[in-house]
Image (cartoon, rainbow, N blue to C red; front, side):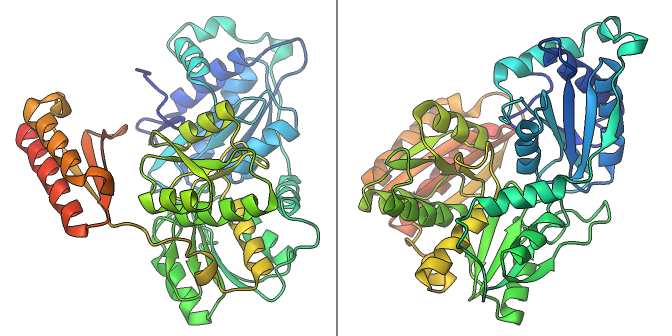
Length: 446
């Protein structure tokens, strides 16, 4: 178990878990770990629009410069942009200050290596070993303290990068697009990218005030986008989250399209174009069985991983896949990016819409999702999944589902909750088996 790092960097309540003291130490420890060679070392730091971002950024800068690293401040930028710029600007490390889709009260610190990928467990443990150590004994001398400066051209660099993921002849002329930036990191770059590609753009969630990130907007709250698409009779709605590494789509009828359908669209398109590096894609155990059956029908496979985009990416890199993602909207296209990129994923979908000349509702309806039910059971302590009554209930539920569905039971990685998910062709059966397992867990957790 790691003390500070979770499945996606360090995250928690600002000024509670994520304090200036912790950020200072993270800057020092990470800076020391990534000082390799005798060149002048540099770090790029981006952030979303939370009020606490100013505090954490300042503390990180103090930490990095105190161990001799120069700091390039990017300002509000999407997480995938920070990953891209870490490589593009030959930085030794990249930092994104964000708690992604969480409310403004939380914040987090995500770290990227010089290759633009999130850090391995081994490197995170190396940083953790330094965090509680004698960091003050390893500070730079007075002549070697780092410098910090803000870089103003990075928005244009990321916009050009995003546009180049499409063929030069592809434009978005004639499309009316509503984009919801969640009052977050992409509030400038996403609308401008879409406009430069020729779309008529209506932007919402682009008035951040430090407190309203993800509040009633963005991919975790698409109601506002649905209303705006219907009101303006738009062709498509694009919902990003606070750091723009995930995306959901709203079609012209106001129906929400999740990550499973988006992966299906891209997989079919890339298969037709011969662009898939493996005959399939990578998703998590939470992706709908309908996606797996659809892929099988077109000659592709679905490899499943634990929940979390880092596990998807690890499997992609290990086995040579160039497409993967999560039902929640993290879509990873390793030909372009080293992490999920909501804007780039949306552009790939838009290019398919333009090519086939059909409405988004038709393009994005690749399969009918199977009935899927997810329930959470909170527990106090112990290991309820190891109790005999629970294991018996799980075995019985799997037997009842047979080959017509799936049952996934897993403990949450962030809170004392057991998540029980089942899906199958028969909604009533799915509901019954979930109730059976939930009751068994609840009885021993009480």
